[in-house]
Image (cartoon, rainbow, N blue to C red):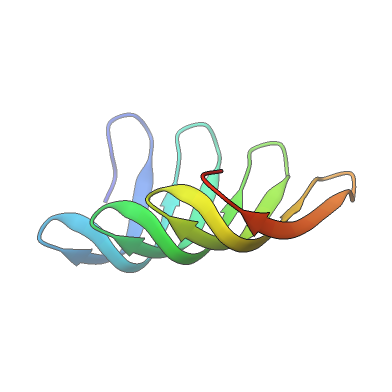
Length: 85
């Protein structure tokens, strides 16, 4: 799916919402690859920020929730349990 704002989605759908495995490329260059539920990031996924930082871990209700690793482009790394981002 291609959106007028420049975003794109490639993945599974359920009743017109992202559901299952998929990848969304945001207009600002950020990318999310992983699990979706009712149009929200939910489950395991990877978020690549436009600046090169990455987050790999658990998501709930569109927020980082659970075990995850945030790594900055410069090599700094944070491994912990996230709560509501």
